[in-house]
Image 1 (cartoon, rainbow, N blue to C red):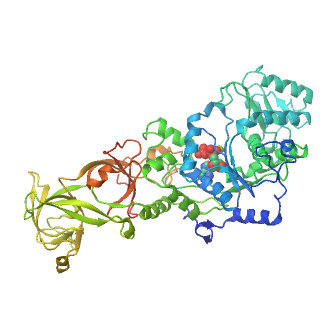
Image 2: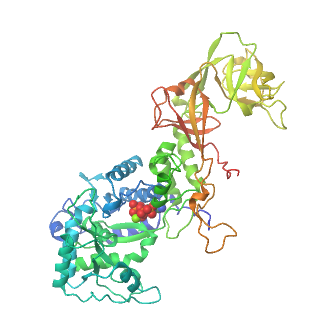
Image 3: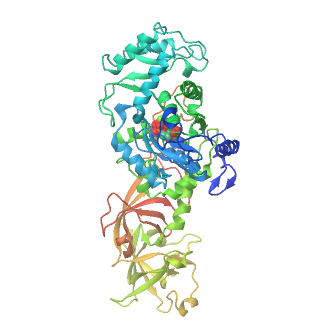
Length: 604
Ligand code: ATP
Ligand code: MG
């Protein structure tokens, strides 16, 4: 099932050339869109006619339904739609596809807008704010539906949902015409108005297009375009009790907004004939400006070790497998942000995976590598001891303290240095000491010398143990003339170099060590040996150890870390001061990604 990740299409970093860009190049070269006009806001042909030339060379849109939080897959769509608009002197509209009153909420609208901004994109262009809602077109959509009825192209069907399903036919068999298909336009208009006016119950009637019940494409077998819903809409309140369906709403919204290239995922390929039919008819009747928008499909993001479906994400949140929508383990954009993933990392990822016409799986490590690369560039270095063991320097003068200096970033001298206190009692990593060293071990063991990074050379003299034989402290002596940065330091050649923090000065920080939320690449997929008909529950594949909360000793400077500041904890990885529960002077840290890709499936 898991194909190797597809290489990105060729092109230069920063502007990968893909088939969509070729398509746009061709359209612009042919002058297809040069005569389009734009009144300054979405509208039908009559409202656009005679207005100024459209200042946008192309228009794309990002059209989420506000029924959940955005996930990593949406980031691909956002980077694509906003990215091409930016590169072709166009504009990408932010549009809410809000035609499902029961499932939609303002909370989701707000979080979606926030996430798109966070990713580095905006919808203000050419002096206007291109934030739109399909619900703003309800009046127009309704009017167009009446027009289609008058033209004999739509009818009210009063079959039950089951009858309609049975009569739709199958891939092999054509559908059967509804007994209501030949209602006259006058009857249909009257009934449709009654539906609108709340005279009928939910499920009693729908409005359907009259296309072709024998079409090999099931989407063309008289699709329903309006249904009765007695639900309060988050923007239009109780004004409507009929709501338009996606296939009808989406193409018309695109056309009203002068969208040139309507980019969507591959599962909509079979809907394209319907997309073109609806707006084609309305353009024929003079309702929509031409040229009409072009739907172009691309492969959705499939990423291993996560689930990218709102339904599954909602389940993870509602059943409390995670702490909320912004749980750092969840592949939502709010989760990613809390995790310490960066917007630039997502943009790099989108470029690298490219856009193609064929579905494939991207390995999770590709995303992690992008985050690592960006954070390596942007995160200052700090020291943290995650698994602390006391190191006592027996010959260090009691009560003495001094300063140790180290660069904020080894490749960026312009970022300057920082100062950390040094003293006779330090915290070091437990793994940096072995009483009986294994072969090739160069760190602390009795009789061996190591350098304390940016500090002194010390020689290990032994250790203390508790009653169970567990090492509780390591002893050493230091060489007073060996300090890094002094002349004497050159006289010491040691193989090991370990990090430390002064025990007296360290800040004891809560650190959340996050791991992947699922322990298998394809959560919920059938396993080897499963019969064909076995359905697995993706929840079975949750990694039971996806977070470990520890107390780490970190350098004192980190006590002042502000929420959302990111750091490289040397030798460990990239961490962020948590935005949700850090307090001033008391940050908590989340691990975004380890320093190297060393992920292995968790042990059972
Ligand atoms: P889900 O399947 O998770 O519910 P959706 O497609 O229903 O997602 P929408 O809010 O309708 O969610 O999506 C908004 C836009 O994001 C759509 O244009 C959709 O094609 C795109 N999108 C959603 N998931 C992905 C993905 N995995 N990869 C690329 N684009 C995606
Ligand atoms: Mg959708």
